[in-house]
Length: 527
Image (cartoon, rainbow, N blue to C red; front, side, top):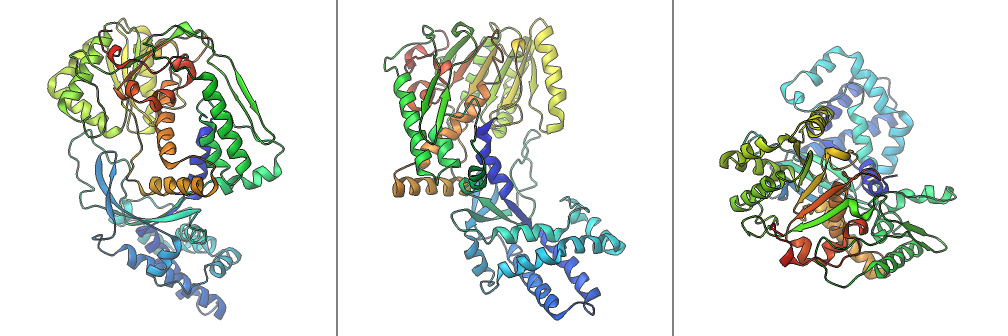
């Protein structure tokens, strides 16, 4: 279930990192271990221990190099805080001047000797070493468990270096000098690193399902945001041309069946949504409409605000004071007609901080709070349940209701149930496109483009990029209308929902209700 998360989950469990403090701890522990037991160790063991120390020393020296000219600043949610450089594993070994090392032989020794476990026991028994690794000021900034050997992180990273370039790459991350600076109390660094780090990232997740496909009689992938099927097939079964082609054909057939080229204004006349199934020897696809009656959802595109200003939340324009003010005026007006709970999804944490900072300055925040009690998605995951309980109480029991600000792709955009009065309206602000400068995303898009050129099957990198955005939007929208008798209105605040056909078609069919792309002239606040 929730099978849209499988590709990212597979990449996450196959990715790993080795930070500078962990590498230094591993080297220090290994050196102390070798010095104490050198008289008892065989020459072969000492040789392998020497090779491991050599690799660790080379990695530490490389990570300690000045960050200048080691990569480019990357925009993480609007703040440039980390320098990243992506290279192949083989290229890293050449940079470290370790290309003559036999990693397979070293990994075999580490596995057979269980050196990581032995080193952990050695460190835990040595009181002086334990204090040295856990009480220094620098170490306190990064948690290092006493129950996991530092060398085990190194061993995992070393194993990833033996994979092919197609499977994954290595990213060298270095914190910028401005890491600790906080420009305002609402701002928080969500993706930067505290220490220089070597991070292995999985690019392709297709080969990780091979064993399951060989052993299982059938694999069922279920979820509410699996379309387009060609996207899921390309990510999970990219090496199986027959499955990828079958998924593409099923998607094209569905699009042809559901396509309505007439340009219709919203709200449009509800149309029945029937289920559809496509069969092929290797793949069966099934899709259906929502359990609610078509009259229980109203979809509204909002291209212009109350003062007739175009709502353009593209990254280059969305932070302007005029745009944030127009969004505030739209919410103020909607508060007058939306009962109970009102959930607003913003494109990023950085933008959410900018919006609140601006609204405090202009007074819009206090005006909204007079109409509905305001809640914000907490920065800490452990506070989510408490915040939801408080919001639910005010939304369902108070006379004016409550408004919750959340972030698309955040803690409350997936797996949270905003049923009934918890969300009588969901307003989506803009489009949460991923950071196009992210080297991992760029590499993934290049791989998809190459496979599409070479084999004529799959999806393009640009289509993948578009699908990631729309999947996040659809997950956010799906927090409301949770059972057959539920109802809500969905407001899509951005002119691109009416001007770009790809975006409109990326929404679920039950939300579009068979309509063509809405008319931008009709997507004004008054109408």
